[in-house]
Image (tube, rainbow, N blue to C red; front, side):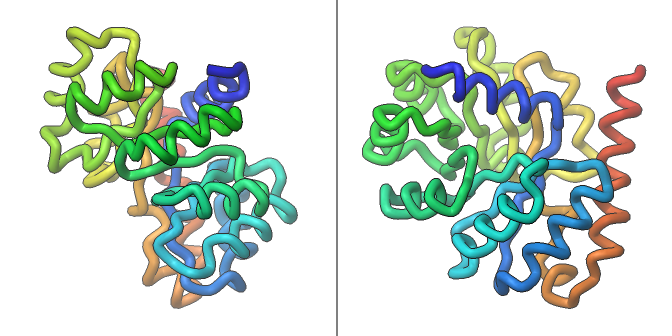
Length: 217
């Protein structure tokens, strides 16, 4: 893969936690980005689960260029193009769709497809991808599954998402096979919809503190 793919992967690893965000209204994008920035969490995976995704990505990337903004739950080539046109720096998909992945690889678009089994890993490796999303993490066996898959695929690293929160965050980060964890516990949709951005900032600060304490051990 291109250096851009690995540059993004290194930045994700540096940040360690990636907020997975579903925005129902693009007007919430800027105050949410402000909360993330104030909390010292310069990352956002804006999911295509809502119709506000494209506009939200555009707002965040323009207003807060310091935030590493990607598009999540990307299922089609059309969504890839819309996300990249809006300013997304990377693509995340829940599974490994060969059509979407091949398109991104051909276009040198950083993509982190979801896998939870050896077949998915081998599909990814064939395409030069060795930093992948492990999803749904807890439902797929959690950190034990990560360690089991890492035995034959030691080169592969994962961004784990699904069922992760403050209680089990460090257990994932302790694994040499994990570059980061994604989650929505600090950016819950109900808090966004209710405009409780100070609460979101507080939750994000807590997450950053957990990561900082983990690193300083």
